[in-house]
Figure: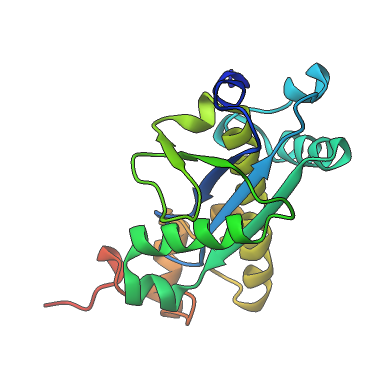
Length: 199
């Protein structure tokens, strides 16, 4: 389970940052940033984990509890066009920078999940597996996942047949079959391997 030890060791205001949506065939990449109160009640901390380990209902409950606790949380995206122009890694880092910039409180330090840190105006430390180690990063992972899933559900209503409300744009069999039958939408990442034109 993630804990608050890294944040306490750094001192000051620490934000956790994570992204979701690097691997899908469709939709934006979304990042979130979270600054948790130092006195976060243990019953709320117990709700927080890597978003991949939580059910949709658990993620919703955790985010609602975090907001109620006074946590500062923001989210931002990089579009399919930006992914195509920059590449998925750089688009992910762009979304992270945007999420940090949108925080209501400027952090003194940022902990980011993964091996690569975005270029930020404050110190930033990458933490491999951070969403399972840091409460702040785990909180950001929950927010990013919820924001992106909601966005894909909205797109699913506009482009029915691809199953985006269920697969979030990932390359499931249903999604791949729909691409063959229905074609590619403006929200598909045309540069991704399965969507590249044949040589």
